[in-house]
Length: 113
Ligand SMILES: Nc1ncnc2c1ncn2[C@@H]1O[C@H](COP(=O)(O)OP(=O)(O)OP(=O)(O)O)[C@@H](O)[C@H]1O
Ligand SMILES: [Mg+2]
Image (cartoon, rainbow, N blue to C red; front, side):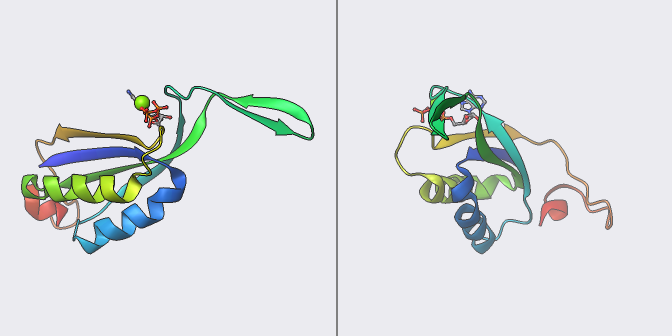
């Protein structure tokens, strides 16, 4: 099993989420986060005064999937989260040793269906 974590633009999350549901992933955990990267500062004006933000709101989500869904999941996330502009976000993938469905006590891939 793999854990896929992705940080995406807030406005892209709904479409990414719907497409992941359509390809049949078993669940998803979503968090509101803020972060910085190369575009470290956003300079705006508020009531005529300059304001700078060094943290930009982002949506982060985590999904645990069987190994054989990985390529399709990565394709689905990139196709739906990408604008092609700097700041589209980051996906990371790691190995998951075990998963247990607390209600049914199913383990492994049965637990994440
Ligand atoms: N190495 C990292 N570790 C953790 N979070 C990161 C990392 N890189 C990017 N992020 C997260 O992704 C968000 C968007 O960063 P992203 O890398 O997409 O933009 P960028 O670095 O400004 O431009 P580019 O798209 O050219 O990399 C950041 O605000 C941060 O939350
Ligand atoms: Mg970057």
